[in-house]
Image 1 (cartoon, one colour):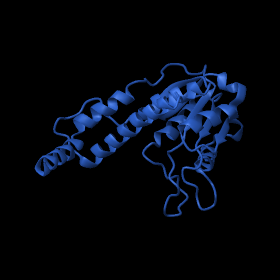
Image 2 (spheres, rainbow, N blue to C red):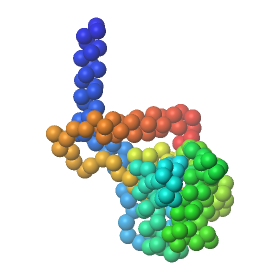
Image 3 (cartoon, rainbow, N blue to C red):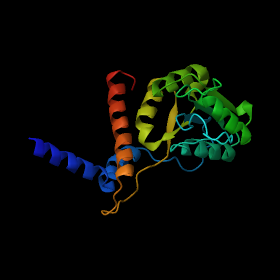
Length: 219
């Protein structure tokens, strides 16, 4: 029994780092929605989910400490510059409150303002702590404007749960996935235990998270 458990443990460890498997699993999540193309001017703007800015830059240089999902902010900024009529809604509160009491939305506000996005175009929801609260608090904040067409910007692996949660909360959103972590094809010899483990962690979080939200009636 002990030998069998050891063999299974070693096998799981080895397969975890095999990128062919982890990429295939992530692609099932990330390829569900395509990035909208063509003229997007019919949309009211972008709703950007938080979870992209770390608590602080760690060195006090005043730089924006983006995490691995930084494409959410970068792509949103590109769309705001491309479509001057677009409005910005950033939703993300206390995942990690800073020493001065600010939350992620406050850091996002400072960044977008420094990039030339005027306060008239931007709204920041700063109390939500998870995807469900992102949706319900954004719905309350937008009011009647929730029925306008919006682009929902979040990581591709997270989009299914986010999109269905926002639609269930009453928002008229179209998926605009970013932060693709899987590759279109994988080399059979590509192996990385660190990247593989991270990919499986992302996959598990979203699969379990979706199941929990489904059971709770949030989607």
